[in-house]
Length: 97
Image (cartoon, rainbow, N blue to C red):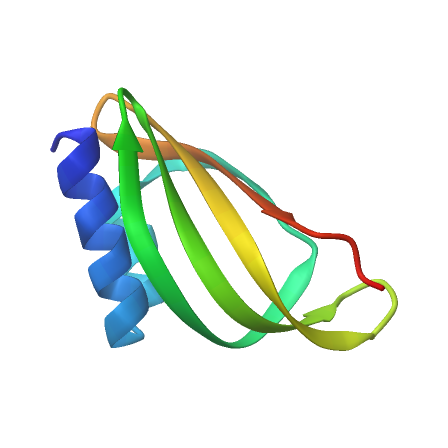
């Protein structure tokens, strides 16, 4: 699959709440995930594709796993694709206030 096809499939899985299927279908076995939040609910915009990367903007209700603090925020997911699979995902959001 191309990066764009993977990006669209990931967003479909997120919208359909079939993320577990998406993990099996789209992620490399040794994929790296950089995330410290428990997600309760979300909406999303995207994907936004460039070369072998894409981003998705999430509007999330999350809890910080370390502190237990829950809040609502925007979050950007950055996904890197190699040989037709997602190999890394990183998430960025504004600091909690």
